[in-house]
Length: 299
Length: 203
Picture 1: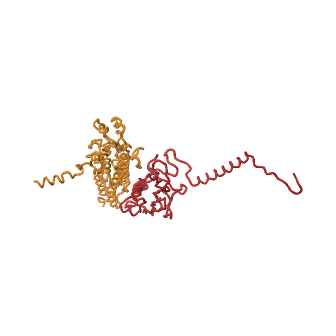
Picture 2: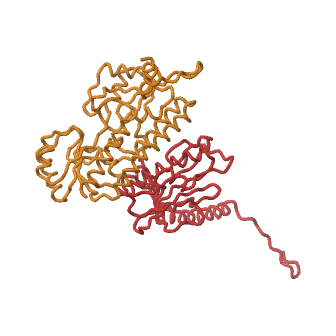
Picture 3: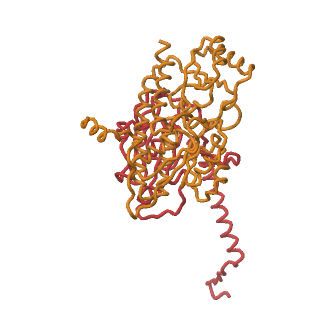
């Protein structure tokens, strides 16, 4: 029993989430509180802040997709206590500007994750595709951007933030590179997606996007739009459709029945518990799903 | 005025008006000549709609393969600057490739056989990606450092990056027609030869 208690004492607090926060030096700057609007930003910011006196705060509840979010007084209150916030800023979290105003936090530093990111167009309409976060390349670039901006706020931490961003980049590159090696032998290189969130990921992995089923983020396609897509899939002999987790099963069944295409799920990294490793875990699963869809299953 | 066989001629200075006219004419000739020479090698106009100069091309105008390569080159440029900050020098291709840094690492997705080479002199460094496929463009990540002690007072932007030691460097990612590795690095990328600086985010 004593040995058991000793083991609990030794190892009971070893999980990542329970690690004690570093204690600030007496004359150090106060803890930096950094908010985020999206799940990937929580992972990226947590990784660049590893081992530093920086608290990462998720503004939205974990189970809510930003695309369906309605601001609440509790979430606005969170903004009042922040020093900085990482936002998408190009259409995925348009609610946040009004929330910041409502919070009365006039000193809040807004870090636009996409400030230096080259943007691809949306599949439908003239807007830019705001799903830059479903991408290894963008994750690396934007993590560095977050690190640089946090370094501006805490110059004493700048070197460590940069080093953390670099280590995180190496970790993400390893996942991307492993997938790329396998996808180089892909028998299928052209797909249709249900959701317009995967353009950046597909481009960096050398996969061509033939069409997108959803007319816009979160919108269910009309009967005509679905029929058009079925026609495209047949005409172009598309054999793989990539879907998100929440697309209605009934519509998916129609797609499957009307075409010879197989359907695979790709995570939008948009809901669930906020954890530092959520992004890399779900992107690794996504990479494996692509390998299965384009390399393994067709052989 | 005649005294025997000797003839005396008075030489008068030109009037101020005539002298001014002659100088102005010479200056005009120089200006016109220079303008013709410059215009022959530089872009003639900017595109106000996109905010781009004629010797620039927006990311959105590239095809998917060049967009992919540009995104990789941007990632590579950040790593180059990190290495320069840490070591004081610009890293070798092999060092970056070993770490898996794009676009220098082996890229199994690349269909055009891009091979990367570093060419540098005292202040200018090029990382050149030349494809085997002659139909594709060469990419160059170009860096120019200032002369030691020459302080440049400009704000940081997409072409001016500040190193951690305070040095402001000029950077750019270019696309052009080069087919062989040059003996010395390129510091000017002439519009007339088909070079364009790629702009990731339009101003």
